[in-house]
Structures are given as C-alpha cells and as structure tokens.
Image (cartoon, rainbow, N blue to C red; front, side, top):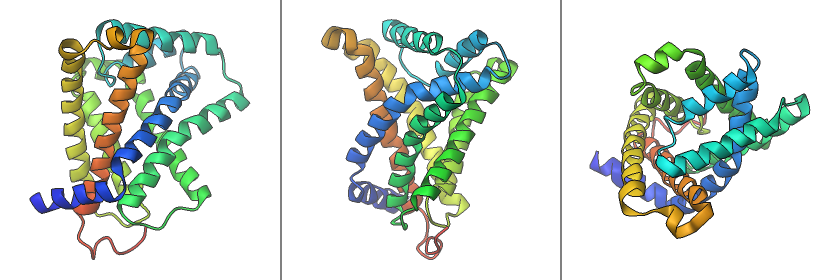
Amino acid sequence: MTATIRRALGIFSRIDGAQAAAAFTYYAFFSLFPLIVLFVTVAAAFIDREQAGAAVLGYLRDYIPITGELQRSLFATLTGVIEARGQASLWATALLIWGALQFFTTLVTATNRAWEAPAYPLWKLLLKSLLFLGGMVAAVLLGVAVPVLTQVGRGLLPGTAVFLSLGLFYRHAPNHRVALAPAWLAALSATVLLVLLNRFFMLYLDNVVRLNVVYGAIGTVMALLLWIYFAGTVLLVGACLSAAGQAPEEASTPG
C-alpha cells in the first residue's frame, strides 16, 4: 500500500497535478451554473419548474460544504440564476450542455495522462464526457425524484452516490483497460478524502478565517473556488491511485 501511495504521488507530480487541479477549478467553476440550470431544465420536464429548482438546490446543499452567510449568499445567487433563466429553448439547452461538458473533458484528459494512455480523438472525448454528464444528471434526478430516500438516508446518500460515480469514472475514463480493484479502491479512497475535506473545510471557514472579512463581497466566490480546487486535487489523486494500483500487465491494453 505504501508503495502504491508513493507511485501515485509520483504520477501526480508527473502530470503537474496542482496545475491540473487549477485548470479543473477554472472549468468546474464556469460549468457550475450551466450544470445547475441544466439539472433544473431536465427536472422541470417531470415536475413544476419552481419545485424543480428548489429540489435541485436542496440536493446540492449536501455536497457543497459551506454554511452560514456564505451558504446563504451562494444559494441566493443560484436561485437568482435559475429564476432569471426561464424555460430553456433547445438551442439554449445545447449551449448549457456544451458549457457543462468542459468540466468533464478536463477531468477525463487529466485522468488519461495519469495512465499515460493515448489521447482520445476530440469526438470520442466529447462523447465520453457527454456520457458522464448524462450519468451525473441521472444521479441528481434520482436524488430529487426519491425524496423519501434522501430523507431516510440523508447522511448516507451523498457519500454513496459519490463513491459509485467515482468508481465508474475511474474505471471507464482512461483510454486503458482498467481492472475493477484499483478503480473501486481509488474511488473509496477519494470518497473518504472528500468527506474529510468537507468536514475540515467547514471547520476552517467557521473557526479559522472569515472570507467575507478578507475578500468582502467576493468572499463566497473565493470559498467556492477554494473548495473546488481542493476537491479537484482529491479527484486527481484518486485517478493517480487507480493508475498506481494496477499491475503493468493489467494496464498494458488500451480500452
């Protein structure tokens, strides 16, 4: 296990993981609003739009680890975006999907680099990213559509959803044949790290620094960017762990 961690850290350094996490933060931040509007647009096909917006934002509160004034400011902004957006046309929905795809193309590309796998052709990269986007939309809709499940297992559902999503991502994102064990062990490790990150991040914001005092009106934005950067780093570390945990003979065949 120690050797695997050392190899993973070596891979993280080789792919310039810190810079890749910064790029991930950039695309994830600018994809956040299109993603949320897209979630609401799809959910509104099944339920009332206002109800869909409230349900999606309520679901996201379990995943974004900020509280107090920062949380109120962020979700007030998101609510305003949803209300101002109105009903999306087909063309507008296509633009939302394109904006949201950049989040996945960045992550898939970095994961592929961790495996030293051949780069995907553009069409295949976009197709794979679209499939992951569809999976994310389906997961959010499931959480919104099954309110009993989200109430009964409110503390369990977010972690379980993250674990399953990461397991599928680490297994199918690289242009390599990935064995089950390293993919799911990496997913478990990344999920645990994300849970710990969220708890420490909330403690950090509550007890160590007041970003609204330091950054004023953009304190909420800075908190969100900081969390996305740390979360992106964890996701990339998970990708490096999956690559480091697979024997060379198992990883020799492109997927």
